[in-house]
Image (tube, rainbow over all chains, first blue to last red; front, side):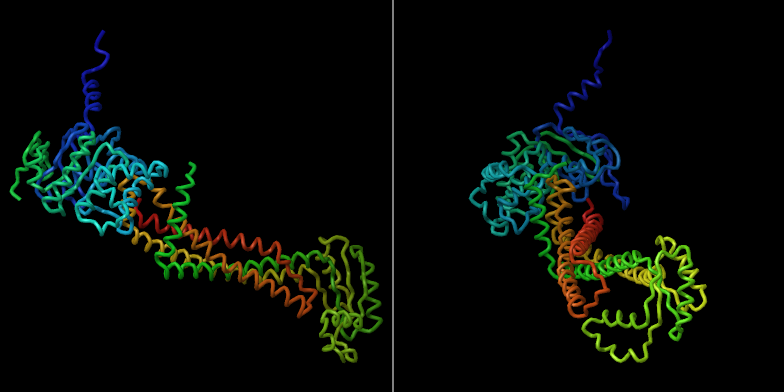
Length: 247
Length: 299
C-alpha cells in the first residue's frame, strides 16, 4: 500500500499548525498602476515578534494593510489562521478583524470618550455582553498600567499613555495577532521603549506581533526577526536581525 | 437573526444622539417631511370624504325629472302619465314647485329667511322623482325619460358622480405629482443630513470597522436616525390635521348646519390617515438614510 497521506499534505498540516501567517507569491498593484508588492513569500510562526523595515514607499504599509484586509492583494495567497484573506467575502471581513488588533502611529482614539470607554468601545461594537466588558476592560487597563486613568479623556494623557490605551483596545478582544504600524513614530525615545516593553509583554503572553518601524534604536537593541522590504520585495529576512539602514 | 436588547438600545441611543449632531439640517429635514405629509394628509382626507360622498350619492337611485318652469298643469299630467307607463319605473313621485321651495328653505336651516319673497315668483320647476326598479337600470331609464315630450332636464346620481370623478381625477393627478416631488425633496434632505452625521462620525466608523463591527451594526444607528426624522415629521401633521378636521366638522355641523354635506366621522378616518402618514414618514426617512449609508459609508 502506498502512502495514504502525501508529503505535500503533511507539509500543509505542519504549516497550518505552526504558522499563523503565510503569504505565497503575493502581488499588489494599485489602480493607478503603482506596483507596491511583487512576489512576497513569507511565513510567520504563531507567537513570533517580527519587525518590518525598509525605506519609505517600499511597500511596508501595503504589506501590513494586506493582513487586515484594508487592501486586497492583486495576486497570490494570504492565509492568517483559518482565514484565506484574499478569498474573504466582504461580509466576512469583520470576523477576520476580530482576530487582529491594529495599533497606529496616531493612536486613533475617540476624543470624547474616556480611556475606559475607548477600550470598551471595541467590545461593545462586536456585541459582547455587558457583564463581560467591564472586568475585561479593567484587566487590559491593568496590563498597560492605566487602570488609574480609566476616567480620563485622551487629551489629558501623554502620548505614550494614549498609545497604551490604543494597545489596550487592540488586545481587549484577545486577538491572535497584533499589527503595529509605526507605533512609536510620534513618541520620544524613552516613551518608545516603554511602549516596546508593553508590546513585548503581550508577545510573551503568546500573541504574535508584526510591527512596521523606522526606529533603528529599537530594532537594534531589542533583537527580533527582521523582514526588510525594498521596492516591493523582501530583500532580507533574519532571525535576531539588525535595522540595516542609516536613518 | 435576533438582536440583543442591549444592542438595540444602543442603536436607538446612537440614532437619537445623531439627531442632535446636525441640529439645523435635522430641523430642515423634519420640516420637509412635515410639509409633505401635511399636504398628503389634507389630500387623503379630502379624497376619502369625496369617495364617501360618491358612495352615498350612488346609493340614491333616484332620477330627478325637471319640467320647464312655465309648464302648465296639462303638461304635468301628460308627463306623469308617460312616466307611470314606463315598465322600469318602480315609483313616480310628484314634487310641486311650492314643495321644492319648502325643501330648499329647510336645507338652509337658520338662514331660511334669505329665501323669503321667492313664493311670488318661484324660480323652481315642477319635478318628478322617479326610482328605477334596480340601480343598474337608472341610466337607461333616464335616457328614456329624456325623450318624453315636456321634460326639460333629467338628473341622476351617475351624472353627478361622473362629474365629481372628473374633477377629482385632475386634482388627484396634480396633488400626487406634487407630493412625489416633495417626498423626494424630503428624502434628499434626510440623505444629506445623514451624510453630515457620517462625516462627523467617520473616525468612530473607521475604528468600528477596524475592531470588527459588522456592516449591519454600523448602519443601524443611521436607519434609526432616518426613521426618527420621518416619524417626528409625521407627528406634527397628524396633530394639525386632527385638530383641523375636528374644527371643520364642528363648523360644518354647528355653524353651517349643512345636513346634506355628509363628512366622515373623525374616527376611524383620523386613525387611518395617521397610520398612512406614519408609514410614509418612516419610509421616506429610511429610504433617505439608505441613500446616504450606501454612498458614503462604503461598507
